[in-house]
Image (cartoon, helix red, strand yellow):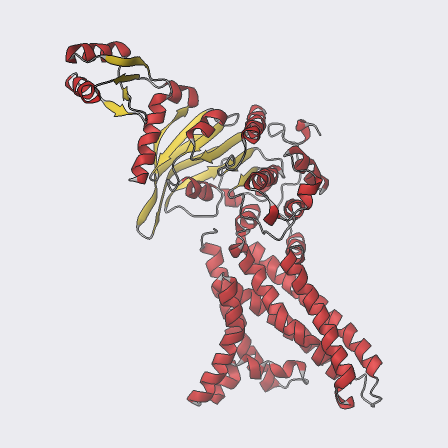
Length: 259
Length: 294
């Protein structure tokens, strides 16, 4: 290796100095989710747990709950719990491990990094859902409950699964961005919706809670084709739990110090 | 080329940078010297667009760092060698950045070899790296895009003497090819060994800057006497300004002849009288660091 090929700052040949494209940045973010030890095991845990819960359903569930539709609802459970955490860590690790100093020095337009993280979240959710569908199909075939509607799966419901996993992970990214610290974000991810539901019950504000409580208003997404009211409830809930923290987070990251 | 123009910054009402101005020209290695907490890192972070100054302007290659479309190809940055994910393998750290900035992955292996990280080291996770190894990885990272400018925060920290000599050669070579290097350090010896220009910062203000040779030669005289108090008195009555060095001597802003006369006038027997050479810079830096400790 000669020195000349490594450092010839004075003799700059024309070359690709253009801005890295969003597709490339998204690929980088996907890579960063899996190339650390923690990231790798987290992804593997999602896959393994999916197989385990579907396996358990094959063995123990009532035949009525062994249809593809039910199997899929069971299969997405681990991903819907763990992907938001992957989303949180995707943002907060840049601060806790201080890799943000490298990331944002390489890509100073911080909004582009965040856009890439959001796109990567969508891609990972789709991959996870594809895996869930495969496992659910295999599970259904193995269990073969022999019902008329064993293999019935409305395409709309599949679409709702996409929305459910995708928004779940984006909510994680949003929460991570708003708090910029892993532990508080993970605690909030689980505690806040719970606290919200309880507070609503105690204060007797059930009507409001219905419109803003993730536990009740996002649950139908994986259960049945939602009607207009349910979509409206899901929308208002997501505005509070996903859009608002995302806006706060983007604002903080855009103008804050990177340490 | 790096241009820091009157940077001022406050955190929580405390002034961390005050009117910080200096320039780094192509072909030079500039040492940014100052005690811990003097504002070195803050200045470098402002230069790299990670932090915004309250007033003043920092430019790299004639423009703001944040306006560079793909900065790693123009400016190599090492802000903190420890700021890497401990669970990522050394080679992967470089590979991820190579992908980000669009350089072929084979360059990663070239650079690992260049900074002296062998295959076994490249396969290790960063958690297992010594500080010296992290510095080498960080330097490889800064060189990834084949930049014209290097901005390095405490790059020699954790390097052994052999590593220091290696880094000096590498940075010298980089500057001799027309590159611009700005590196910070809190150790005068380190900066003396590597830099040909020195900028000294203390408590957020630039206190001295210039060519190393000039600063080190320093006009002035180093003088000492067994009767220290009497010498100080003699100098004062002759109207000469004197600053103590770290080791009991005094640095005087006057020629050895004038100092000799003052001593004769005061009837003080000298134990040493000569040109100050590095002692002026050393005493200045000593004052800065003791002020910080006080």
